[in-house]
Image (cartoon, rainbow, N blue to C red):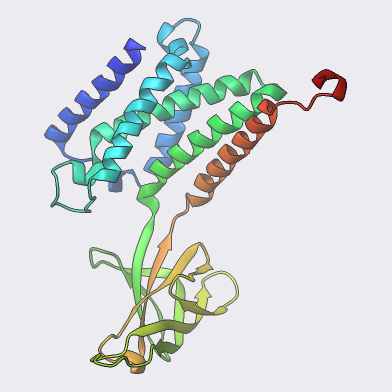
Length: 299
């Protein structure tokens, strides 16, 4: 496995050089349609590599365990580092390591793992048989989850919409303060707040529950009436609408409700990949489960 660890180490060095010279990965430059083009290029590249596997030793080797294990070790190590170092969106923290998702060594390592996984998935697909199903499901699922999760990240929309009772709003702001006109409108009918009883010595009551009675108007489709509250988002027209905030100065008298709205068009593909991996694991368990023998066999 020396070659695998050398290639993984080389990707780390290359990533550090890229980070030092051109800066972090600019995911915003990979938004649709660029990510669609990258996906097409990746699929074609994997297909060409598989077709040339008999002529190019590297491509054949990339489908072996000796390539997969080092790649997984590097990916696992970087993922553990991601979990140990507090992540911050912009600046602060440990240079480079506090923005691991934009860190070139992290991205290159996972890109290498995606290619290896895609090749193995194609190999199992091309020699399809019943006994290949668990491995095919596992590798196709992992490939879908990794690729769609990475390429879909630039297309995630996260905005905040401020609404007032009796008014309909379709504008929302992103984290940079840019205003967007959305394809859904929200009419706030009533903001609801319940508070815990006043405790002895307390200066103010603590909110127990806050929610909003709304009607959501998608551009295509029927209006949806609902009550949105904390941890109970509403799904409409591809958006997840969360109860986010209110006018804290007014408290129970607040006539303002603020919603966080999130749309991730690639999420269904990521979830499909995860379900395929679960199905593959179940199939593998059933295939490898010990068979119950007959009584005379156990004697």
